[in-house]
Length: 136
Length: 395
Image (cartoon, rainbow over all chains, first blue to last red; front, top):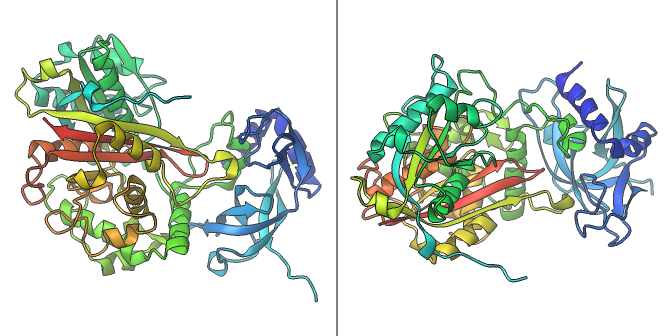
């Protein structure tokens, strides 16, 4: 197995509180931690709110919508992975991958929708694709 | 809560020894031996010996799980040990910690070393994901995306260009200035001057960053010896003292962070306040140049120019000694000279010391240099980078 993905599997096991996120991801749903004290979402997930330090944090179903903040990728990478920071509609920036286009096809500000990639570890990883414009 | 700040009156750390190992490729030397050679060089420069050392400062580049192995290897007897590690800026933090330990009487002669061999080990420093640590709290969320140092800094550059209109030509001017300085450094890895056109013609690694926006991968290291003023005055070397310092972590802040801002905003402000000086007073600056974009971001964040003006500040040779408004990295920097063990902190201090002593190459020596700054980040963006700034004064 890919070393990075095996390390990721170990990381998930080392953080038991992350399990609801991966369970939802398997069903194609993106959960975000939201603080019920200050109302804000944060990323990456913690069991407390890093913004107001309350411990009243719960998993909330996210809209899955985001906007492209910045992206790049190694031109020599055979997989042509596009790494990105996206700004989730709920507020925080998230490190992720963009799928469906080559690097040159993306522009800062592009509207995005979450999607999930099944990994060989059995975990499902959130990635983002261009949001389909709704039919008029 | 009131914040207590310190002032330059407590500045009791005098740098009396500074040494940059001449090697850039050391396949036949162990990392521990490189540390020893650097320590010996700095102690010789100071006119001191290993037996005089009673404080040791080193980071994660020291081989083994902690610094004890190196201390034992050197057979020194410190009564104060500090192994703070915040990435590439660690030596800048060590210098501040050494000054504090000297001021409080915890030690009298502090030794700081940094060394390593990423080039001999074939490390793809910027273009391979770093091996993760499962226990790290960001690992479940960021590790599987396989980010590399270069793709992260490329996103910073892309964002800076988007927000402020910074151009690839402006980034290229940073490399051009470093290459003009490296011509005069016989130990520099790349001594050939390059033009803006040559930088722009170098291959894209991770758009918008090109090969010549990236620093070198080099073996080697450096060391510093820091002592109290009364000991320093008895030595032959010109006096250089730490008059201000700042250290911080610019974190991901729960996802609400700015990619185009560095921790220099905090560490720089703290260092300037402590030293009681302004950016316009600085005659020479060592700015950690792992990527060209980081130089102009730090210049903005330190207050050498307004936020977003970094591109205009660096263009047209403005960082070239003798020609521009602020000489930066007159040794050739990490871009052209040296980036030992992927950590730029110690070489940044060493070139500032050379300038303040009047021992830089004559072609790049700043006339009557009395006040210098050295700074740099550690770690990388997204899950947080540390940043340290020091201000040094000729005594």
